[in-house]
Image (cartoon, rainbow, N blue to C red):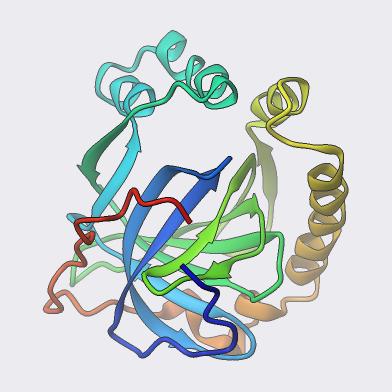
Length: 225
C-alpha cells in the first residue's frame, strides 16, 4: 500500500483511521470526511460507526475491571493483542488532524439532534498521519489532554500509561521528543485561541448530520501497511 501524499479525500467519503504498531493494526475506526485542507484532515464519527479495538480494552469497558485495562499496554509491547469488532458509542466525535502534527484535536459532542452541545475537547498525542488508500495510519502514544469546552482549564490524562509505554519500549526516545514539543504547540493553540479553538473556526458549534449513513469498516482492514 502506498502513501497518497497530497491527494485529498472528499467530503462525505468514508476513511479509516488505523493505529499501527510494528506492522500490525492495533485499532481501527471508520470515519466520514468533513473536509480535507492544507490545515487539517477533519473527520467525524457518530454512535454506531464501526471500529476495531483490542479485546483487553473492550473487556475492560464491558466489566469496568481496571486490572484488565492495565493488561492492554503489556500485550501491546509483547505483540500478543487480539482485535474485536465493536461500535463507537455515546458521543459524536469530530477529529482535527493536521498533516505533520504529533497530535490530533478531538471535539466530543452530545449525539442528539436537539442537543448537540460540545462536551469537551480532547487531544491525543500520536504519530503524524500516513495517508493510505483506505484512509490514514497513525499510532496513539498514550498521553492525552482533556480540555473544558470553554477552554478555561485542562488536565493531563494517562501520564502513568505514557511512562509505562516508555519503560516497555512502545514509545521511543524520538517519539518522546516529539511529544514534548507537541505539548507546547497544543498549549499555545489553546492559550491563543487558534486552530480549531479559534471562535471564528466554527468547530465548537459544529453540528453533524444524523441522516448520513454510518461509516463501515472495509473487509480487509487488518492488512499490513
